[in-house]
Amino acid sequence: AQSVTQPDIHITVSEGASLELRCNYSYGATPYLFWYVQSPGQGLQLLLKYFSGDTLVQGIKGFEAEFKRSQSSFNLRKPSVHWSDAAEYFCAVGARSGGSYIPTFGRGTSLIVHP
Amino acid sequence: EPEVTQTPSHQVTQMGQEVILRCVPISNHLYFYWYRQILGQKVEFLVSFYNNEISEKSEIFDDQFSVERPDGSNFTLKIRSTKLEDSAMYFCASSERTGFIGYTFGSGTRLTVV
Image 1: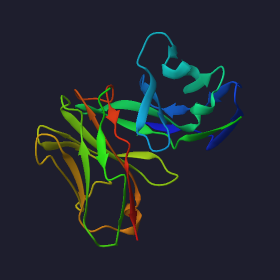
Image 2 (image 1 turned 90 degrees about the horizontal axis):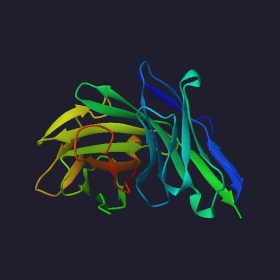
Image 3 (image 1 turned 30 degrees about the vertical axis):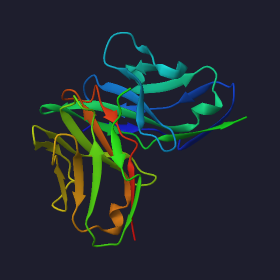
């Protein structure tokens, strides 16, 4: 069965600094990989996804993620963080189960942005 | 942009009581899902629903849970006899077609069982 590990429960950065949120997955085949963001009081919003092809994926809000098969990682990056990026970030892996895809989420990383 | 709407945003209930969490999926979506997130833990899949029947369910989705699409717009999750451990954030999601690719999540209902 697939699993996702987000090793950092909290990350604190200063506004304008760069950001990297870590995600490691376990899955036997090529996974579908996702990053979601949850702002306070909001639903889970898809930031970006990887299915195949170019391993560097661009998403919304200036985020990008790189799939590294050798490291089983899909880390999320942003070159310059804005205060509005403070939120909970979830990595997820989707694997086919029967006729549908059952996603597995990580525990989430809470991003705190200092002014 | 179309949204998945969940009501209420927060519900407090006494242990043993029945609760119904409501969701209005995006109108042209055909697949509906419930997830939950216990505080500090992972977002967990509960159930998927298509063509008026459950298509997948997890181990968590036991006999105390049920889902229904009572009309053309609502999708509900019922917990028959709530337990303290049912306290969690419950997310509804919908998609045009099967699979994780096109999920849209609602903003969640925080259920507190006291």
